[in-house]
Length: 129
Image 1 (cartoon, rainbow, N blue to C red):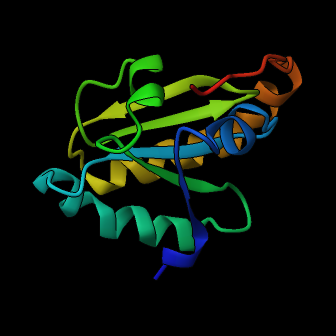
Image 2 (cartoon, rainbow, N blue to C red):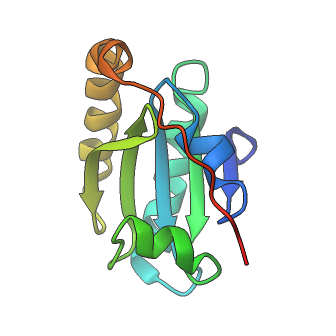
């Protein structure tokens, strides 16, 4: 449930999927070896299915994508970050009650239009060596 609604992003696709998007997106920074990530993943996938027509969900494996992890100062997993206009606007860290994550998604949906109206596109290119 919800697996097909979640986009897997990496250091190379991050800019196109997250930073160039003007509307809100939720990203789960996770590790396959993290027990808290494994506990939260079913809820994340459930909400991805539940909100599929309203907000995109993405996930990034922190072990395979050090550039993005460092750039956004992710030091713990799971970390849930909402982005709008390419910028982080809200964050939850750790294994939170699933209802808290759901409520935050609902809040971002309710107030996300102001985020979109007040955001400006970040125009820069990233070179990978």
